Length: 78
Image (cartoon, rainbow, N blue to C red; front, side, top):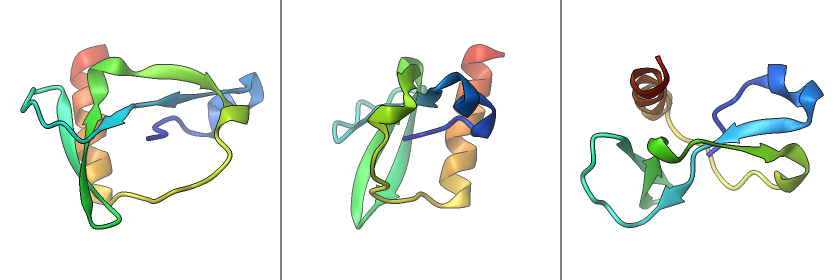
């Protein structure tokens, strides 16, 4: 899940949060509904990736789900 905005694009990178289907019920995880399936955003594993790796958009999440992920990231990063 891409969570960075366009300010990182000139640097050739983006922040992403990896997804899993395994729900461990950790406080650093956020539940997402993507294409009719449940995915778990593992916010504690925030990564920077080269934007050239981001070739296709597979789905989007709701505003509320995005806000949940951002709130977890804020609590982890400050």
